Length: 313
Figure 1 (cartoon, rainbow, N blue to C red):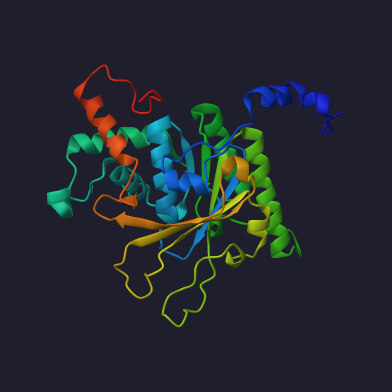
Figure 2: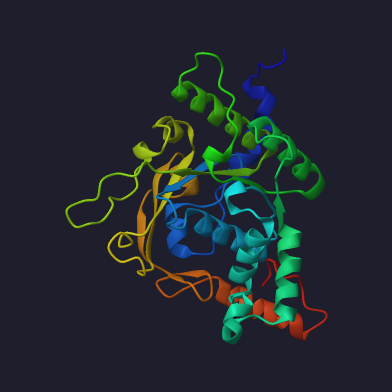
């Protein structure tokens, strides 16, 4: 009977899990982040925080690392990062670790490095920008094509408020968000991909110390239904930005992890700094890009070197 299942329908899968274990989240290549959250197909992740504090940049950086070291591919719907040249250049700069802007000649990457970055982004990132409307169903249709034709592992929707929402007559916002999140979850499970939704925080009043409070799952614009329906909720926060705009200290945290034994334990990481010249985050002076740079150098020096994302490296 269609739509009805019994245990015996998935018995082989259950026995396989008994012997080999269930699918766990996979590494971000950043030990501290792994403790708080790891990539897992079939899950919907929310990334929240205040405007212009690095939500998208942080997520794009984790995606860039996953692409470089494992060959993951990403479908990205991100109208706020358009025009496309800007988005591609941001990815190239974090991948190479240098600027592409000729205004800064002393730190600009060379053309060979820029071409290397272009080839990397072209292989691993596909931009979704429908010509007529940004309905969720249209975005998912394009994502389905990328799954079939390119084998993408993940879909990023950045941010929620750029989607053209189609609420039913008289439908409450919380009920619409519940339906929206349910569609994302169904798509993630059916296609075995990791989905990421960027959502802004409601901007609160500053505290007595002049800072904005830490982002909270219950203060995502649109209400707590986002957190209720998501598998995982993470935040990015620059705690000193309101009193010192030049301060690059960053806090990353996970506030909801649905399957903690498989994905991580909710916690915060405070020893993060953003190096604007390299467009890279450093975690207590560590970055996986050190390894990526080393592999890139080997690849350039030898015509027979294995692919960049060879897991044997």
